[in-house]
Amino acid sequence: MFIIGSISALGAGIFFGFIGPTTKLAYNLGAGIGLAIILRYVVATILITPAIIIKPPKYSNFRNNFFILMLFTSGSILLTTGLLSAVYFIEVSLTVLIFSTYPIIVLLFSIFIDKEFISNRKKIFFFIAFIGIFFALGPSFDKLNFLGIIASFCAAIGASTMIITNQKMSKFNINPIHIHIFTNLFNCIFFLSVIFLLFDLNLKISLDAWLVIFIASIFYSIAFFLQLLAIEKIGQSKTALLLYIEPVIGILGATILLTEKLNEFQMLGVFIVIISLIAGTYNSKKI
Image 1 (tube, rainbow, N blue to C red):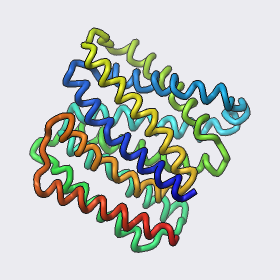
Image 2 (tube, helix red, strand yellow):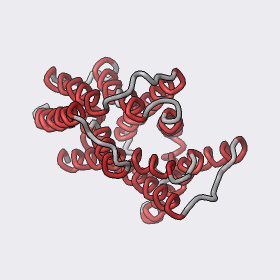
Image 3 (cartoon, rainbow, N blue to C red):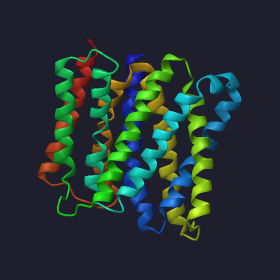
C-alpha cells in the first residue's frame, strides 16, 4: 500500500508539474484561459466515463456525502481559477512559489486539527523542501502585484482543501473514481456556464495550440486521479510531502518546453528538494 501510494503521489506531482509549462506554451500559441479551463474538465470527464460504466456509483453515496464532495469541488474551483489567473498578474515562478505553500498548510492542519503524529524530522524536511523550492524557482520580486499574490494564495488554499477533504472521504470509503467524476462533471458544467455567460471563448486557434492544450488537459486528468489514489493509500501529510516534486518538474519542464535556463541557485534548489523528498519518504516508512 505504501509503495502504490508513494508512486501515485510522485506520479501526480510529475503530471501536475508539466501542466504549467504545457499550458503556458498553449497560451503562447494563442489559447486563452477560458479554453484551458473548459477543456481540462471536459477531457477529464470523458476519460473517466468508461470507469463509471464499469463501476457505477450509487446515488446514495453522492447524497449522503454531498457536503464533503462539494467542499472538495469548491477547493478544485478555487485552485483552478486562482492558479490560472495568477500567472496573468505576476511572474510564473513567484506564482508557483506562493502556491507551493499548500503542503505546509496541509501539514499544519494535520498537526493542529487532525492531531496526526508527525515526527520532528519529517516536519524539518517539509520546510527544507520549501526552502529548496525558493531557490529552484528564483522568483522575481521586483514585479509584484497584489491581485496575483492573492490569486496564488487562493490556489494554495484550494489545493489544501482538496487534499484534506479527500483524506476525510477516504475514511468514508468513497471510491476515487466517483470523486473524480463528481468533481470534474460539476466543474465542467460550472465553468461552461460562467465562461459562456460572462466571457468570450476563442476557439479559432492553431492546430498546435489545440494539441498542446489537449495534452495539458490529459496531464491534469491523470494527475488528479493519482492524487486521489495516493491520499487514500498513504494519507494527506505523506502525499503533500511527495507532491513537492511538482514545482521541480515545472521548472524542468519550462527549461525543455519554454527554453528557460536554470542558474546555479535553481540547480541547488532542485537538488535540495529531491534529497528532502527521499529522506522524508524514507523516514515516513517508520511512522
